[in-house]
Length: 126
Picture 1 (spheres, rainbow, N blue to C red):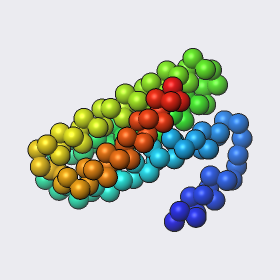
Picture 2: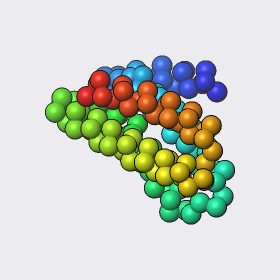
Picture 3: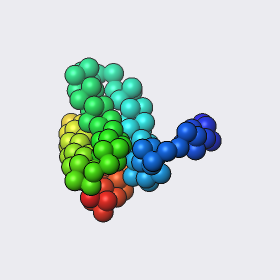
Picture 4: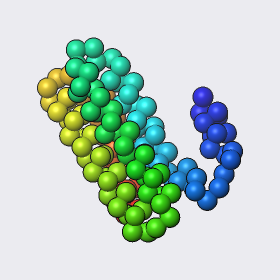
């Protein structure tokens, strides 16, 4: 599966798709998949809560790429700030689920490690 993803990132390159080289974008995609898989297992969680969590984590990689494609430094910085905000929103949501006992501490610690890496990379990029 990882090989197929790498091949996809190597084809049809142009300047507007340069965000695909950013490590922070790749990690945000991985965190989205990680969170989404966990959400599938939470059968007692309402659809609304799952949707909000999924929206916030999906927004991170989306805003990184949208800002990159704007081709203006000012707009790029603005979209990186939005991505950082979405990342914080998602952390708060996941932390609340951990605090309420909906998710286990081992999964939360792995999430936190991935989140922390993206958080720091976005701060540096911004």
